[in-house]
Image 1 (cartoon, rainbow, N blue to C red):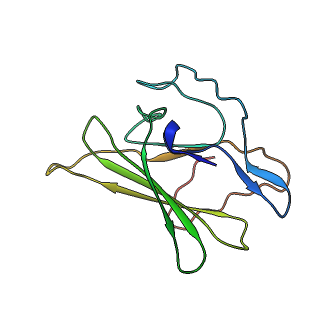
Image 2 (tube, rainbow, N blue to C red):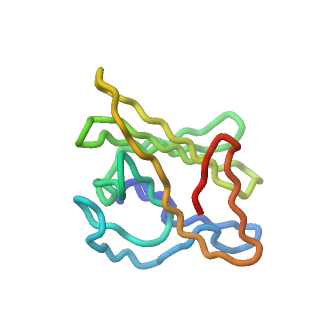
Image 3 (cartoon, one colour):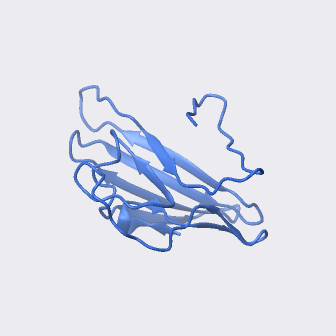
Length: 143
């Protein structure tokens, strides 16, 4: 469940084979004043840039849906942030018969000046003995 109306966050991800959520699903959306300019909500996965909790984490984002030739589908959420006019896009792809979610991120500097940014995702996952995180070899992860 992706919510473009609430910042393009993943609110829920459910494995139909194992019949369980694999991302923490908070069924209650109760905004808290944690973000720099907007509220923050717990649960799911939020995407943060250019710093801290994204200032527009609670604002609607643009989105489009692509149906891919291999039977997968991708939802692209995007926005232009207000400080430096950087465009950020997050693509969520699900595949038939595979129980994982692929997430792609794209950033576009729309100015002629170099811009700094910090990009991070804040996943809420119920952890047990079988939990594992897998990152590409070129990614540094902080647990």
